[in-house]
Image (cartoon, rainbow, N blue to C red):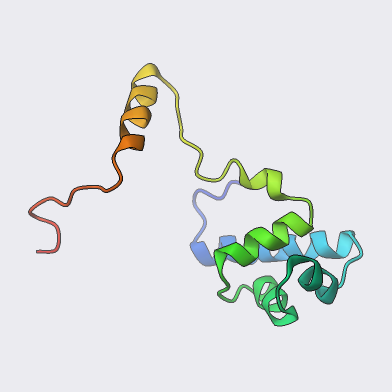
Length: 106
């Protein structure tokens, strides 16, 4: 597994797009197959594999078609390493917005 912590966003996008394309080909599916099953256009699949901007929902749809939805569960999961983290997480779920400080935007 490659450590992405020091990678630039563009490098991560390129890597994920390559993995997406390889996964599709491994499953012997055409872009049209994926698009049809995901309920999106072929151009959207092509754009996704090329790293061009597409909606997040379209990425989720393609992941589901390729049997990779389970892997999305770990995305943005809370990091809870201590009881303090747990308490902070539980408290934050009640609050919907982060308050801006007086120095923000000045």
